[in-house]
Image 1 (tube, rainbow, N blue to C red):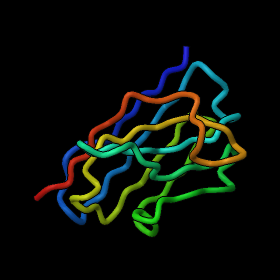
Image 2 (cartoon, one colour):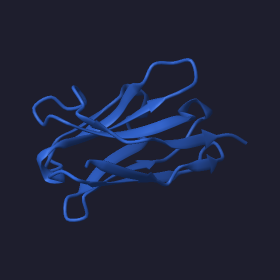
Image 3 (tube, helix red, strand yellow):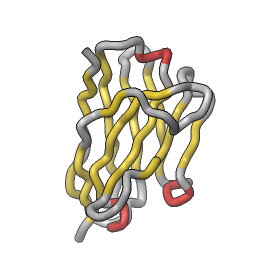
Image 4 (cartoon, rainbow, N blue to C red):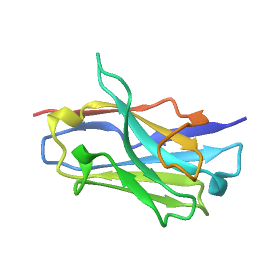
Length: 121
């Protein structure tokens, strides 16, 4: 059974940082690309960042370039999202997902339950 345990969300002030983690189990983690998505109230879920199986390739949404960094540790079956210079517009539920390695950030097979990030003073 595929499971994701997401952690690291919370309330942070504008300009602050958070590091999200997503620990996976129940499938061969190293064979799938991993992605982070987010969804704000009233908006569609959108891709934030994606990383290939080995970490050699990454993909970022324009709105997070230079602020967020995605990484993975295949030995720990975990993907991370380091978020710096957070803005109120980054407030959302963040989800990790596993998908195909040939096209990062598309056609996700498995989804996590999400972790809430709130950016507010």
